[in-house]
Image 1: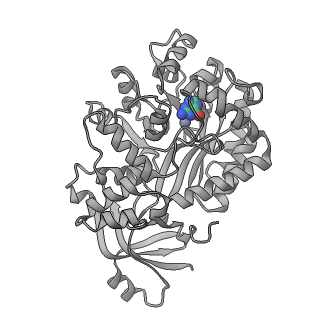
Image 2 (image 1 turned 180 degrees about the vertical axis):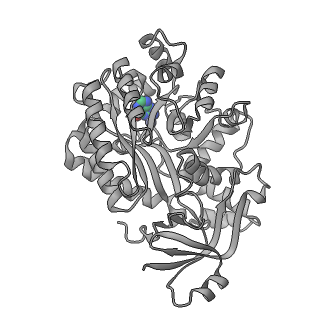
Length: 435
Ligand code: GUN
Ligand code: ZN
């Protein structure tokens, strides 16, 4: 039996905060302890009570830092680590000029293995304990991704992209090949340890109707798998989509036509949706994923975060980095940019809502809140230790902070990987010891 008491200031959310003063939405213990046994949380509470009841168990003392559930990043591309910081293009040019040439390299399994290892190192460094990631079209890239996640004991969702047009020859499969390769990857990886598969037609522009149809068949045959794709990111993309699918009334209708909406369907971007499209996402329980650093970097637009959630038919939302359109691996930097995108729409992303979204909110969005996203008995001990005085500038700013919400806002606005002092996966510290 492997046991550990993790001591610090515990913060976990119970529900969506109604506003910056909603203290009922979270639980906070000033001197708390999480008791971990064999990777899972056994109890959460006051340190004094925990140590009395569990004398002799080793203690990892992280005071005065915060301990919270690990961040969840529900949309990013692991083959795009060397695409970040590619200058000067909007989405379609960016894909053709920078992204596709880089993804071509993932036919080489050595390259895929090297980048997968670097990718999960960065996740740990930035405090991200679960991802939903796109791999390249090559099955070898998905093999590398899952192999590395399994080795680290992480709960991840991933899938090879399917694309059968509008891309270089080396990145193109066919409807049948996409189907066959996806099916054998599902058979091998989905449900193994903490791994899940996402059926991943890249987007309507790089899939023929036949491939989207096959994607729908796959999802129907594997209804416990996820589906991930891109939707309504950029005006040129939307216009081209409507040329390719003239029979559909709008972009969302394309995915609807092939049965790709649903509770486990994650749609990246969703910036320019009509009311009808938002209704369709809402009715099906689909998730719209907000990728602020990417949307700003590529000049795609402003995600209507509160508008989607506060409409009569609310749309489920998540927040993500979208590496490598996104410009930071950090969910803290992502929350900061999210704040600015929302500010430009006359609203504010308060720190409670922000930290809720990056933890329990994202866990709910990917339907994994029974496993991760909160400090609760029975959940996996995927935790991070967060330091609000990690840099001289943060330390100085923290001198004037008097409340937890203010501390969280300092983290949200100034924090990055330096503010993540430790990352635990299933109760095992992983950041100390990283190169
Ligand atoms: N749409 C289709 N593929 C991609 C991608 O890799 N990144 C972004 N941001 N949008 C996409
Ligand atoms: Zn993306």
